[in-house]
Length: 246
Image 1 (spheres, one colour):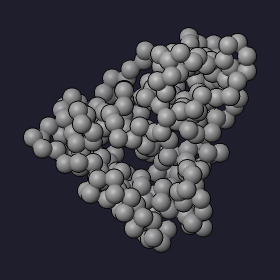
Image 2 (cartoon, rainbow, N blue to C red):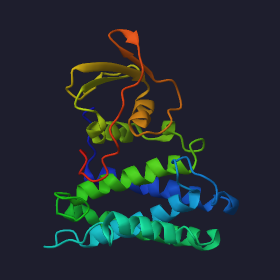
Image 3 (cartoon, rainbow, N blue to C red):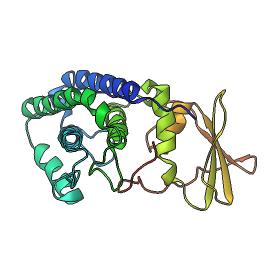
């Protein structure tokens, strides 16, 4: 769990994720937009609207990196984010799809220019830099591709480097009372948390990352405590308001 990508390597990965997501959106049938997505309580239209909204917000963050007073991620904060998603989700598929694709295209175009600003501040989260915004973009593109279709884009399709990053990033989901040892098949164990109640979870690295992200593992993830099979530990809510580890 020591692999950290260089700025150039990360931008390459994010660009690839954007390209794959755009291909997925182009192939998405119009009739699927009204259906529930794999993300609980979200329709496919809401998810596509969120990708459009996130792309616009990320573009603004990158454009204003290093400014004295960088803009917040979304106009109106989280309430504004939800309102914008719900409004865009009302659009017809033949309007919403190109809107999202255009925004993702514009986001893709600005990525190479972020290297020179890598550690400059942005308004994404308190204390965040361009590097943090790029990692957040990586998470949004890959996780929501899985949310759009968990069968075509399962966690097994995530790059190994992404699964490793996601496990680092989501350590804040571990409760203070727990110590979770993730044991990927054939790899070194990863310890999350310092609580008194210990669990061991075994599975592939991508399935363990999916479980930590609240997404369906493709294979078997097994939990044990005190050397016996056990229920899974209860994770804290997604840490949406804080800056996540890289």
